[in-house]
Length: 246
Ligand SMILES: [Zn+2]
Image: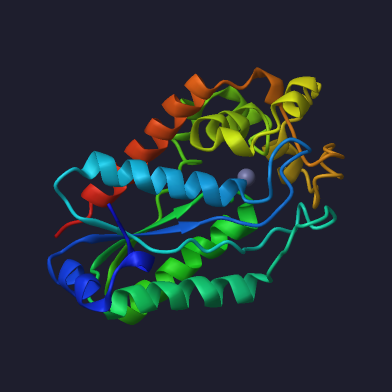
């Protein structure tokens, strides 16, 4: 795996010309309960990129610096959360993708792990815009969709995919030093079906029944489960990349 930020331009040029894949991790800066940091989505996206590169083996992979800001209206009231408008998010993402494509990367994957529906929709729109402008093949693996979602556990599809067992497990595997273990073990389970609440019209975590910006069961998370989930997420993204016709 190559980290674009650490390479010289001739090296990037050679990798792009040689047909390397480019990966763009996308996250958010937003509240993730009292036990996790603001950069959870960025950490997860970067770790998935690392595992995608490892799975691709011989095929060269260049991971670009993560986009740490997006549309995060649900967490807007919590300290530290920074939200961009849909227009700003779309502009930033499409222009970053155009920048990557302009210098020869023909197959690009956007690895987004900020799951707010309006944000994920904008990620798809930005990829479409950049695709139309550059002709590059830009895939947006969407692990919420069937058949992927159910593989990520019942909490992911019907519960607290925000800062609950799912994301806490991913963080225990990817960056355990960033998890406040005592805090997360003390958190009571919040059995809220977040996707259903969003469908029913909730516009914030408070309205959805999550006054501390977490849902589900952070106390039930394990690093072991997190590693298994990260491998599934990497597998989904790898498959999306390898399905792209050359
Ligand atoms: Zn998150």
